[in-house]
Image 1: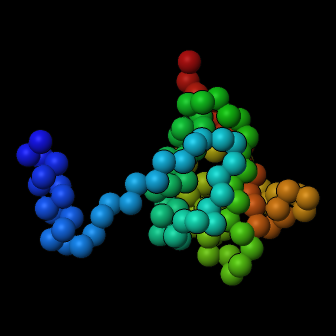
Image 2 (image 1 turned 120 degrees about the horizontal axis):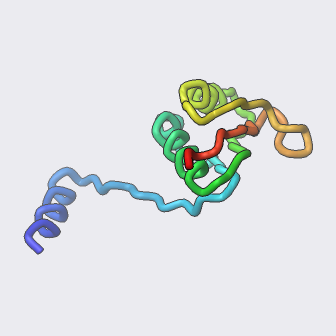
Length: 108
């Protein structure tokens, strides 16, 4: 109980609250509600969970905009050990506003 009080006190002192967002894991991640600085940690965590759940292909929606999210997503994908390949989605599936990712299966 004391720990909870300390956490609440700490939040009150800084005026900040940790924003924890629980997202159900599906084969699509829509980044429209996330900040660009969240991508380097969010995408690898999402991919790890997808691999754990057995997904072999996922779609990451980053939007078209100026390409900031797309570039951050691609950088995260290039570094992830379970990513076999990735490419722009077909026009009917988001075009250059989405990236399709092929994942290697989880080790048995």
